[in-house]
Length: 147
Length: 482
Ligand code: B12
Image (cartoon, rainbow over all chains, first blue to last red; front, side):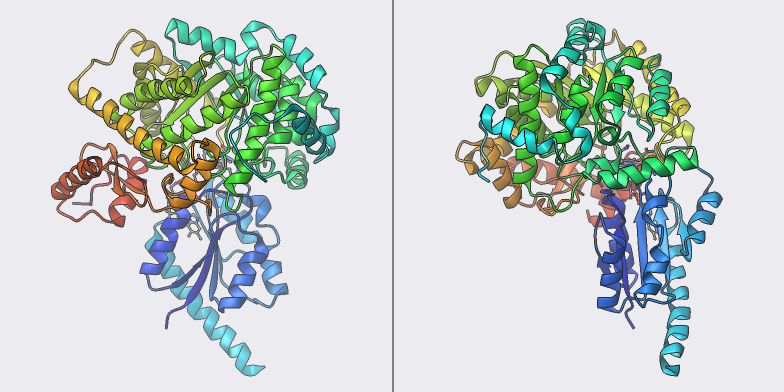
């Protein structure tokens, strides 16, 4: 079954090149990609995910304000009924050249399931998506069935 | 709103100005006469236009970094640390300010104070206001330019120019198409006419402020003719509002012949179009941006890209070069990394200072090609605008006649697809609605076909993607893995 995912670049960020490539790669990997483009607010991702019954949200932040723009994203998802939806984040996530493992700690702390640097192998991301969506579907569907 | 390329009447400008200055509390401190007086107090060596003019006369290439942090004292320390390694200083503005989100910039300032380090990607000049801008200008000994990416830069211009900055980057096209998503071109061109009119007003009061259209656009495989057309149009729009010091820009593509031809043709064409529009009292200079696309993460490799750009900037005769840093692939550079990029660039600029890139058939051919391409596009823009370049520009983007690759703006067609040829020059793979002459299109097609044969594959979007990554992975051309 073709799973829907929502992608976009968060905040006031205009970097469009990587976003266009991600759309292309995920579409070729068989996903139904809802691409919101650049300058996307937290609620816009969530609106789109609800509307399209998406199975994951992939946030990009390239320009360095990710550390500010991403605060509260997980809570907002939960508040709006997207309990446990896989949340990925990637790009040049913070200001300056910092150790990736420190960056990962910050964003995992915010509730992102997976955190990627700019040089990530996108095939690896596709594998992670399949894996996490399978778990989400299992747990999510189980919850729905119980309710 | 009726857009036209016509000098804004003073009463209209002043009425609009009153409103602009209320859009954030710091606007109320700005008084035009006081701004003029402050600018008059700057010594010659801190006046951007004067320093550029002198370099141009002496045939020198000046160096300039990008730099900006959240807090004023830190920003001053940064510029003071850089000024001994460069000729011209910037203040790069943060991305919230660029979109007029001053309340978010305020949060960024507060969080940066808390964190003890800048969490903003630039200097939030509007929030800091007039007096703090002057403190920056007074703390340094080189001319300072505002570098940003702001579709509506009216308030920022008011505050920074009254604050003593003597050059202002941007334009209604180049600060919309690569930097915004939903701003209409009518709006951004009109708002930039305001900025140019303000600069023109300073000019009328004897203060020359330098204006620089942003040459590189999306920074990613932009064919020279397209960025040239945009730079020339923004120059024409600025001249009409009274601007007299203009620096037209170009982002390096990486092929030596195409890059040198680009700077030569850019200067010649701008001069030609500005004079044809009836202006002859302007100061024209050029800026070469070191490679603006994805950088290699490895710092030694990054230095190589930086130095190559420095060499071409020098040999092309550009008046200044905008310098990258070894941290480019990752994040906002530290002052040390920024200085390293500047030092690497200065070394190579000095070494090529007395070398002239030899005239050759290949260079002459490339110069002529760019000129023909620009003229074809420009004449269509004038035609669409029925003689008015502002109207023509809006219609040309609607029609896809002007089209910037990989740009986020909804008003950009995004049909033009570039790809490198077998020698790394950027060519047109799919022209969309860009009106290039038939024989020029055939030439581009043949050059791309030559590469495709060499690689044993058809030209495709994958080839374009390979080119986007190529320099970051240590090559110029994105060849398939063997
Ligand atoms: C081209 C470019 C621009 C162009 C962008 C044109 C456009 N509209 O797209 C222009 C010149 C306009 C520009 C402007 C700015 N830029 Co810029 N830009 C770059 C540059 C050189 C390349 C970016 C790029 O296109 N790379 C190619 C694509 C394919 O890669 P990518 O964007 O990284 O995306 C890939 C990965 O990150 C990853 N990925 C991304 N998102 C996600 C999400 C998930 C879930 C996953 C799994 C993976 C993933 O996959 C993508 C595809 O491979 C980078 C530096 C570099 N990388 O060398 C700086 C850079 C990104 N820019 C930067 C900045 C700060 C800015 C500005 C704010 C100006 C400034 N202060 O310097 C403005 C932006 C204003 C705004 N409102 O956003 C900084 C960010 C700093 C930081 N994080 O600390 C960088 C790193 C340069 C630097 N070192 O200072 N920029």
